[in-house]
Amino acid sequence: QVQLVESGGGLVQAGGSLRLSCAASGRTLSSYGMGWFRQAPGKERTFVAAMSRNGGSTAYADSVKGRFTISRENAKNMVYLQMNSLKPEDTAVYYCAADGTTWTTVAATTLRAYDYWGQGTQVTVSS
Image 1 (cartoon, rainbow, N blue to C red):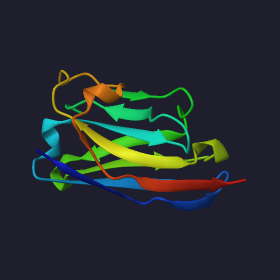
Image 2 (cartoon, rainbow, N blue to C red; image 1 turned 90 degrees about the vertical axis):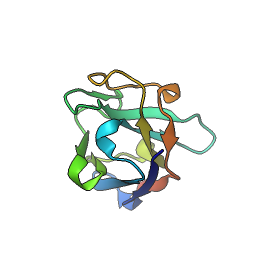
Image 3 (tube, rainbow, N blue to C red; image 1 turned 45 degrees about the vertical axis):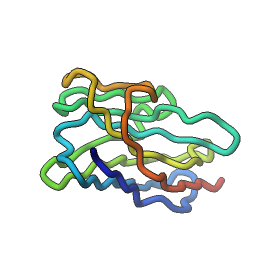
């Protein structure tokens, strides 16, 4: 089992940048595909970005392509989400998640693929 803790959220103006971090404990992150999801008030949790277990594949929601980048440092048991050119519609609680079952070369994009979740970090983008 793995425990996940997100950090790095905050308030930023439109056009600004933030880097979210996800710290894992309990098991090494190299055993998991990793993903980021977000949930805006009154809306469902949706996919943002993912990286396969072997780090060779990534996937992004169309709304963040070219602006967000997912990365991982297995040696530090850390996953990151670099968010650039932020927009007010990016405002949400962002969740880190670990996927222990999908094939090692696949970056899973569905919520049900993920077994473990962090508590979330709030990102607010002002216009």
